[in-house]
Image (cartoon, rainbow, N blue to C red; front, side, top):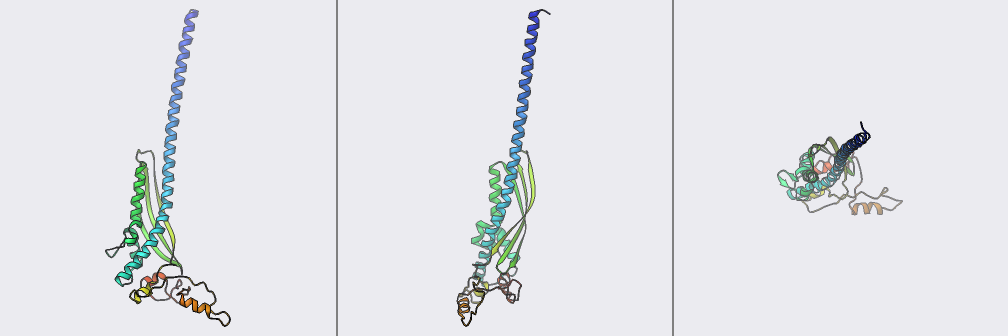
Length: 247
């Protein structure tokens, strides 16, 4: 092979090698870009699912508070105690209704309304979210506090099929009864007399020979935790038996 031919051969070989290196680099870069895009999308799904669970607990707190208010309004309007507090509470928290009656104050704070908003928000960023709302539990956990627990099954996926998540979440919140009206006063006086539940600030009602604390406790309609009295949930049902969480 002549010197010129060898030079041409090396030149062509160098060009081919350089071209192969460029193609290889472009393929690796594309692979890295795609991998980064997938990783970013997975993180987006993970963060959205985490935020949804946190927001569920917040919605549960707001909805539970309004549901108690709505049920008390219903009781005043109808002049009846609630037959089944758990059933009444679950129905109202889910759909803002009880016994076929709409509870206006709960309408925009139901768990159903929250689910619809969150699923729509997911769709707006290219995600498909399905929330199945399951059991709701209401219980008295102290003389002054209610605990609401709700279960939800969440399925979240990317509309392009890159990734999906599935998770069960149990949300819970504490709702203080302080500030609510005592249903026993409301119904037994046909709505003419109301008394807001406030915890007494006094530990000792008689100090020396002074009865000032006792008189103020009575005049202000304060409440004292006592196990010979009905709890708030019992009062909503017109049950006046003793309870460990009585007031």
